[in-house]
Amino acid sequence: MSSHVDSLETLVASTRTAVAECRSLSDLDSLATEVMGKKSELASVQKSLATLTPDERKVVGAALQEARQTIESLVAGKRSELEEFAQAEKFAKESLDLGDVVVDSIRLPLHAGSPGVVAITQAALEDVFVGMGFTVADGPEIETDWYNFEALNIPPAHPARGMWDTFYVDLGEPETVLLRTHTSPTQIHLMHDAVLNDRLPIHAVMPGRCFRRDTPDARHLAAFHQIEGLVVDEGITFADLAGVIENFTRAYFGPEISSRLRPAYFPFTEPSAEFEITCTICHGEGCRTCSHTGWIELGGCGMVDPAVFAAVGIDTDRYSGFAFGFGIDRCAQMRHQIADMRALTDNDVRFLRSFA
Image (cartoon, rainbow, N blue to C red):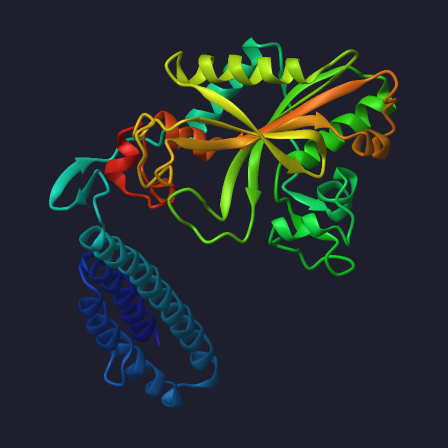
């Protein structure tokens, strides 16, 4: 009996040493077969239990069970260690060094992220308008039909609805929740809040992303950025609006760039106008970007329609105001002489690095 117990203790000790020396899973598998297989010492002791007395069988059986559990634990622990090592080694071999990016066979160092040209342009526009006395406001990109259309004098049956192909969101009643088609809903939020909390007058600009079902071309994107301005105060006239447009054009594009206003129609302003600037690509000579006119339409503007004031509860006998809006992407295109606006979304590293 004692010889069996001694042999099991010796087996455990030798197995402990052998397991520690294994350097691969194949080595460990061979060792496991040797110490726990059909021809192993454990199997031999297991067979000898039948020849022992009941008392001896009890002692040797307990020692055998303890030895088996110890060896299995040693093998399992080593297996886990070797598998982790093998996995790490595999990852090391397959890993990709992102320290460099290969573009057209030229290795360019990968720099930390920096603002894109649209973000840079938005910040510059905000700086110009803040310098002119405006505050900066923000609003939700998902709007209700009331804020995006009805409060802006565009009721459900109004023909002006055809001016926008809208992305509607599957929430609530059909065609009641949508991705905003312009940043004008933020004007409604501002005026409504100002009336409720006695915060008139308003001098604010509202930058943000908008969505329309446009086919991308040199001058249009389906997801684009706008900035709008709103002034509501006593004694505001169209001359004030024209002065703001002129001062903005000179401050942002430079004194050599001209602007002009042309009569237009917008349901939320009356009178309304479109404002254009000299094409900065061809400097007024005519090119593909400006459709060979020498002018680029930058945005729309006008005096806030009394129906819009009525929707938010502003007293039109006391207050008047103007609004304007234009594309941030278009400003970036003009200021940086980007011939095709689709370059803003192409993710060409060479283009993006030119603004880093």
